[in-house]
Image (tube, rainbow, N blue to C red; front, top):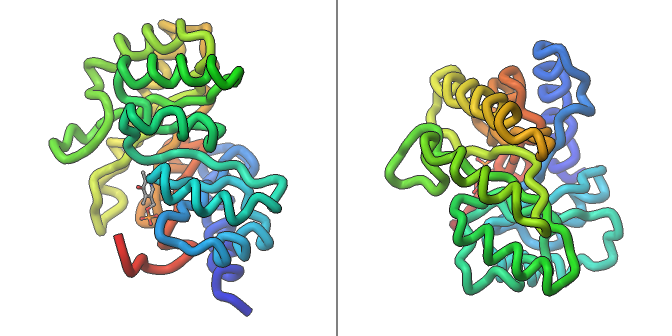
Length: 232
Ligand SMILES: *Cc1c(COP(=O)(O)O)cnc(C)c1O
């Protein structure tokens, strides 16, 4: 049997235990399978193992892959990587959610394109909580201004926040990053009650247990499910 099945089972068990430790049920946390560099046939196996939400970080790759998997009726595709404005129209066609909104300019472009497609696009605001120079995402001090602009855009539905924590072999070291994102979410909820702020997308293969303990509602797992990526 393909090891994807046992990896998914193991991840789900660890997710359920962490959810319990945070006083929530396993269903409160969505497993987003990060399928960048993973060929369509293996994504199909993951679907057969019960996964439904797939995260890609490039529009072109997602287009090819989802195009090869149009027979999976319950698959949901989400964009988790940086989006250039010239790819906004294709992104709006392909994805149900864009997790990586980090500027007003991008949000406005997505809103115009969603309107043209008569669509309401789900979005998360990406925050660079660790304030690493190399990372995408809005700085925490600039989040409120971004949120204020995005909640007004009629074709976008803001559902929460996303972050990519600094990479570390010691997951405990990034607990403060996850806690900070949760606190930012509470602040946004108070200031902009017109959005639900239901989602905190945080935690990847190395640190998802800690992220769930700190309140993640979505974890994005690539290597934990599919093994090491051979190409970037
Ligand atoms: C690649 C990627 C992931 C998954 O990383 P793993 O370490 O393989 O789990 C999650 N989120 C984003 C934004 C990514 O680019």
